Image (tube, rainbow, N blue to C red; front, top):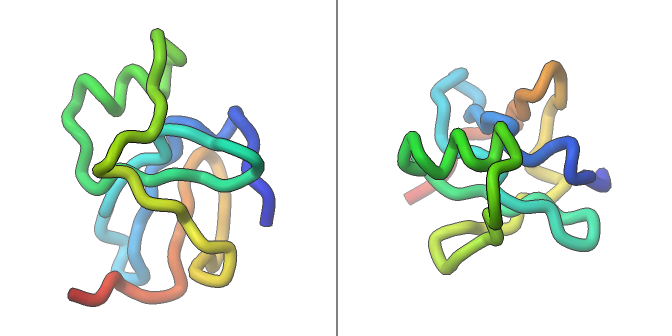
Length: 82
């Protein structure tokens, strides 16, 4: 699956429908997810305000983890481990 800038600000949910993060940047078709970002960071991504480049707290989202993408929400196949 390839992501676009339109996916920035999308909420990411685990298999239990618990929100685990937000897509803060899409680079070269890869979505970078910041786990439980601050409200400020989430709004910046959703409203496309300023730079919202992925920082050291953002992680690439692997396509094989994704179950469904719909209405600015990404549902993962499983819950995160750890």
